[in-house]
Amino acid sequence: MAHKARKRFGQNFLHDKMVIQRIVNSINPRQGDHIVEIGPGEGALTERVLDKIGAMDVVELDRDLIPLLKIRFVIQDGLTIHQADALKFDFCSLQQDEKKIRIIGNLPYNISTPLLFHLFEHNHCIEDMHFMLQKEVVERIVAKPGDSAYGRLSIMLQYFCHAEYVFTVKPGAFRPAPKVDSAIVHLVPHKKPPVEINNFDAFSKLVNHSFTMRRKTLRNILKGQLDIEQIEALGIEPTIRPERLSLEDFTRIANAISN
Ligand code: SAH
Image 1: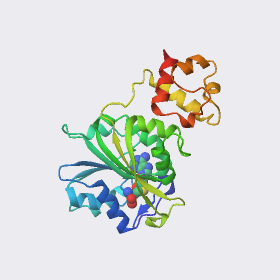
Image 2: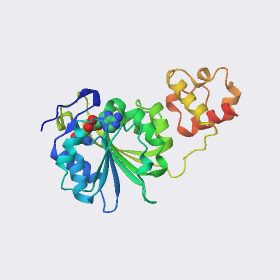
Image 3: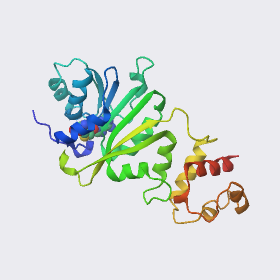
Image 4: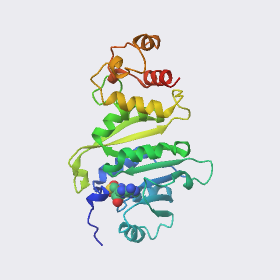
């Protein structure tokens, strides 16, 4: 029963067995782990993980894939299939005891950023996450101040998680092959936020605003909000550009603005 990959659902199915094995090795599923896969597709990753731990949940949006998954995994009764949109899915509702869930997925690239932000709302019930994303997005996630890929995504993400670039995956590992390189990222939610943000909305607005003007100096960006003396009082150089400011710097500025 062949399934025709749908562009609309961001379907690029993994078929390179070496790559699949490498991903599963980095996930390192252990007996007793509660693993939830987003977008199992035809089950390339699902199969290997299920072999190791015997039970897991999957969240798949495409209705046509559900019967395929049911047939493929009919003998493994540990697979629980949720036909749902991961963007709206309540991941914490799957938690059965104090054991946190581990989330994995070769994600549909068109929804990867909103999906990450949706998942951060469930941070408290998540142990870790392994995702396949567009390589460029992973580079943005792990970028440090001063790196060319550094921006809004780097800062917001580092507030919620510790992030690590695991490895690059070439287009040939998928069917159909995407146009861009992909990469695996490992995210571990912080138990306690690394900084204390007084008003998250104000912080988020500041970061957005700063990176729409990334070539401007901080003094210009903050015009009407903080003057030069106030910026200097935070121990920050007013002529610096936002691409050099750390999460701590943005927090200090946002807290000063919202005070
Ligand atoms: N894990 C599979 C498939 C990856 S393709 C593999 O590696 O081969 C991305 C998968 O995400 C597809 O199965 C697609 O149908 C599914 N998907 C797309 N949007 C989704 C959404 N909003 N919620 C859940 N699954 C989604």
